[in-house]
Image (cartoon, rainbow, N blue to C red; front, side, top):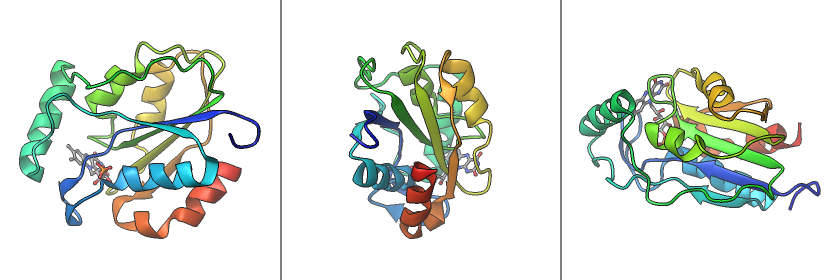
Length: 168
Ligand SMILES: Cc1cc2nc3c(=O)[nH]c(=O)nc-3n(C[C@H](O)[C@H](O)[C@H](O)COP(=O)(O)O)c2cc1C
């Protein structure tokens, strides 16, 4: 609990080979999600694909493209009941300016009425891409608050930036 408001982080992140930083044990978005958890004490849910993405970047890119095109990206575990949360942090890498399809599937049947959503992305140049608009479309009834975009190569220097974004 933070500011008397119960909050939840829902995020997707892929480790392994990354275009900008080589092989990584922890995905960039996961680093930011964990900062938010440290700062706010939020509950946290990682969205995971039933079929893991390839460890190799070039193959993962093709898999991601196909999943977005076909809208076929089953997830291991659904988010479940979000009714007790007031603030929901939604975090994702930018995949061709959009959410990975697993995030679309995780979010699309949840009831966001009256919730505040704080979107965050990690990226290699596109910033937020079209993700805030995509979230507004998917999460009907939510108030989509100020967003945060962090370059993947900067995640380990960004905890203060994350704190400022949360507090503002
Ligand atoms: C399939 C795929 C598509 C991507 N598309 C974009 C893009 O459109 N714009 C961008 O800035 N970065 C793009 N990236 C880079 C990722 O958004 C960036 O590396 C991000 O930090 C990865 O987060 P993660 O480590 O949490 O998965 C893409 C990466 C992948 C694997």
